Image (cartoon, rainbow, N blue to C red; front, side, top):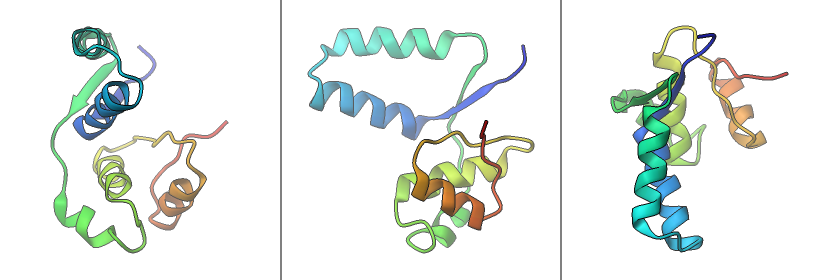
Length: 103
């Protein structure tokens, strides 16, 4: 395996919320999607987070609490890269010297 995707439970919670509340996907289908996702090879669900790091970065320099949480996870896992399409979040990560995946 070339890489492992670390997926914090916060990401799963937001994903479930959007599927349920915005797209009205039936809950049993969402449950099957999440189960399939977390059972895939190379997916590792992360539950721990350094809340001291989160709170030291939120709300400044990272104004979004969820982003600060993901930044803390990215910082804590040695050799990891954070993948995001959010340019503001990517700029925040650069400020914090957290590695970002880019091609």
